[in-house]
Length: 251
Image 1 (cartoon, rainbow, N blue to C red):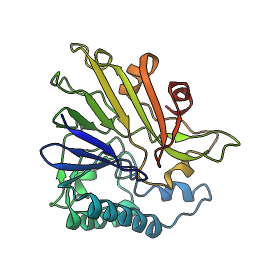
Image 2: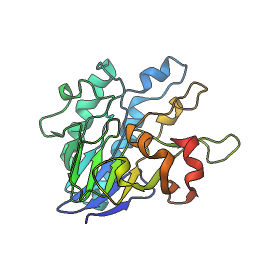
Image 3: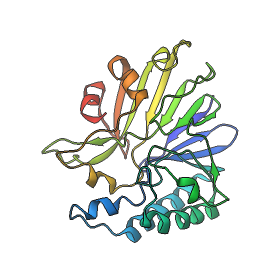
């Protein structure tokens, strides 16, 4: 069984099995182009440097064999924007000099193959199984897999705690769910853990704090949301915000 550790206060997990894997999700490089149209200016150099610095810190301290990017590296869905052409190849090139990098495409990664340096390994959108853990972006249902899988680590939801008047409103959060495995894999039995990573891009919540914000739809979460056996919502520093009673407002 793979050992897993949330790397508080970073939105990253460490998985220890045959190798050491650090997984992060939802970088959304290029998202600032959309925000500029709403009058919100965020420097791409600033947030890219900050993400590289944080990933470099994690890699130096955890010494993973593989850094696994769980989708939505880019922000546009079907096209590749000028900002993405400029930033993503260089960003991935710098990462690949620190550590071996694997990439599982997400729903925003249309055309990502044109931006990926040869040193970065592209994984199927169906995800990657490490021992008993499936690592996937989360925008599609997993394929039929071995009954030995007892854990899913995913992104896509970019969960944010939004509560008017709360000092924690706008904070990225972790979601942990325990559900019946049959809800996801109909021909299997037992319990399944689901861990939803916060977006690694800490500025991405600006695009969510609007009256028109719509939660990301995940078929995995839709399958299990109404029949969760146990849930925890955690802040980045590991504090418990609440249980399943908070899920409706977050996912």
